[in-house]
Length: 554
Image (cartoon, rainbow, N blue to C red):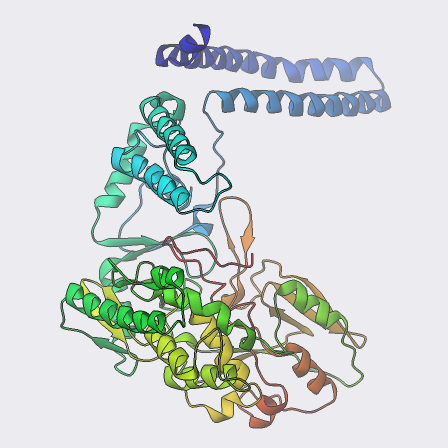
């Protein structure tokens, strides 16, 4: 009975009234003691020597700090039990990038400082969504191979799941999930931001934060990217009709493979398309660059070929790396620490411009099939012709929606597709040592060392006394804009990194031997100190705002 009473809203309301009363009383006491403190301190100074006074003051200060930590911890625990959390002030300019014409109110700024991951507790569970999740669980259990696979055992498990579903839904108590520090004014501020159709609220391209853009400017920036007719094409077909055509094309191919025993029934059911949707294109603002350009990201979840693309990724994985690939920052630091040199060196990093959209699809598909079937006629029970058709289906027919208009990507790889990073790695591994001088689609930008130091990924690389040294990139105004870090509300720094993973080990060896040119466009430099964009960056640096799996090395 006592436990039931403590869970009531009346009981909790009285707790907050008592807490407010205690705060008022302690505030009065604090003011009184603060007024007495200077007088007592002066009295102690008059009755003690200079040395004794300072010793006593240090002793009292140290003991007071220890007690303050204990008291603060105890009070924070009490507040947490009441559902309250202390508010930490954060510099909004480090979190919010407002490039719109809307002027944020104080309440709106305070809320946006919480970040895009902040969410209010659920007021009440939705009937359909709640029970549908449990029905999916029951369906999954029916298809699982368990030890006791009898109907009676399955029925017993399903009954327990049904009981749990009813218990969690009908016994839901809203006051247990109440957030008392969130007022009605905060709700109104959120509604005001939500109902403003003239702005777009999103995340930046690199790191955490909140970016606000005028919707008109945002749409214009993306339309400029879509106006490239060599990469994108506007479709006048109805989305539903186009999706049905693509699903039928894929399902006929899968049925043919199943009938020829190239794939099993389970794989056929896994890859078969039904109830698909077009992809959704959106842009992530590059707040560290002038004019705030956007990076196009395609949410490919629930597209007709999404499962097929995921299925092909592990098959292509063996040809996505070579001896020059850098796996991550730790691997890079380890490799560089083993390199020594005698001649003077000049360090530089290279970045490919718009890599994903500049990957030639037909050429990359030919590279994939030729390398996979170089020494065999059969890979995972597929012939070369079958595999090429599957690969084309997974990347060539990418249709998506933007601003209520249907588009098709005719060339390049969509950033957001499961096969995007894989195909980019395959293409660059193949053109390892002469990609800049051979292919018209690939163009480099470079960054040269300053004072024997070069930022690379989230590491700073220095060379001194014939060795390389690595350290974490600090936040400073001296860094280039692309590498400045954005401080978020949680007191952490996220590097603003770019596509800079290259053949650093071989490049460093070549430069140490005195070969190569300092000029970025030199074919000799590219030939000897070439770039290789390994698996430590492809796709991993971009976290979409969809339900797609997060692929981030940090």
